Length: 456
Ligand SMILES: [Zn+2]
Image 1 (cartoon, rainbow, N blue to C red):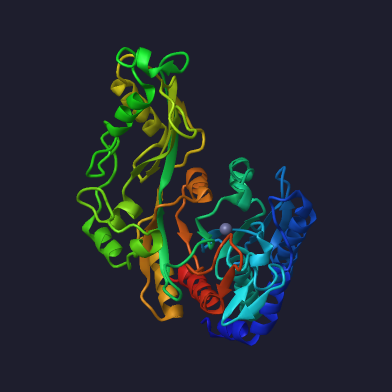
Image 2 (tube, rainbow, N blue to C red; image 1 turned 90 degrees about the vertical axis):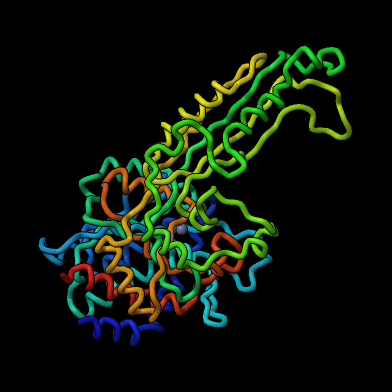
C-alpha cells in the first residue's frame, strides 16, 4: 500500500535534499533580533511548502513574538483520527563560529551526515514530515489521516507564547493524538520510543541568623551559624542510600512494574566513567542507575552560597546562607505539592536561633508518560522496526520537554515522540549534523506509521 509513496521519496531524494538545504540556509536564530526577518523567512518557507502540498487553512499566527505556522488537512474523512504535529523552525545561535568545519548556514554532506545549524534540531525532522506528506499527496492524492500542523518559531527561546496560544485556541488545535519529532534515538539506527519524561520543580531556601556578619571569637558559642544550620537542614532531606527523606515525597509514585524494569534493563547503559570521569556511581536503594535516572524522582542541590568567599580566611559567623534546590519528578507527583512538602520539611527541621525563608520557583512542570503498550506506541514501534530493520527500544528520559507537558495538560491526548536524531548530532553546538540514514529511514518510518495508524 505504501510502495508508491516510498518509491516517490527514493526517486525525488535529490530534489528533497536540495529543498531541505534551502530551509537550512535560512539563519532563523530566534534569540537574536538581528535575525527577525530570517525567522520570518523560515516561517514563509514552511507556509509555502504546506500550501504546495495541498494543506488547508495554512496561516502564520501572530504570537506576540515569532509567528507560528498552522495548517490543516481534513481530506482523510471523519472515520480516521487527526494528528497534531508539533515542531519548530527556529534554531540556536551558531557561535563560536570558528569551530564550524563548514559554514552553519551552508549545508554540506560529509561521510553520510548533513552538516548545518538546524539539520537535526529541528528543521531536518520537520522537513521529513513535510516531504512524507508531499509523497502521499503526489502518489495517492491523499494523506491517510487528518493532520493539524503546529510549527513554531520560538522553541529555542523557551516557547514563550505557545502555551497561551494552544490554550486560547483549544478547539482549533484539538486532535486525537500528537506527534513530535524533536528528539533522538539512543544510538544511530537504533529505533527508540521515548515514552516518558520527568517533571521538575524548585525552591530557594535562605537561612537568616544575625543581622550582620559577626566576629567568630566574640560570638562563636552563643550565636547559631546559618551555614551550619542550612547544612543540617539539607542533610536531613536525602539519606546515604539516595532515598529522599521528605515526608510524603514518594506519595502517589507508582512502583515500577516488572515489564518496565525489563524494558529499562534492555537499554544499553552509559559508561559514566567515560562521560563524567566519576568512578563510582550511586542510585536510590533498590533501583539501578538506569531506573533511577529514567523513572524515579531525584532531589538535587544546585547551588549554595553564604559567608566569606574571598582569598584566605575571615573569622566570621555569616549572617545568611542560601541553597537552590530542584527536584525531577515522575508521574503521580504534583510540582506545587512537592514545593509545599519541601517547605514544610525545612520549617520543621530548622534549628532554633535562625529563621528560614523559602522562595518557590515559578517554572515547574508535571511529568509525562504514555503506556508503552498503547496501540499508537506499538504501531510506532512496529513502523520503526520495519524501516530500520532492528527491534525498537523503549526509554524514559530524566529531562523535561515543556511542550509535551502543555499538550498533555491542555488536550489530554497521547503524545508520540518520534525522534530520529542521534547522540552524535551536536545539537546547539558547532558542527550540528544529521545522519542521512535517519533522513531516509526516518521518512520510511513515517510513511509506515501514518498508514499503520489508520489500519485496524
Ligand atoms: Zn528542538
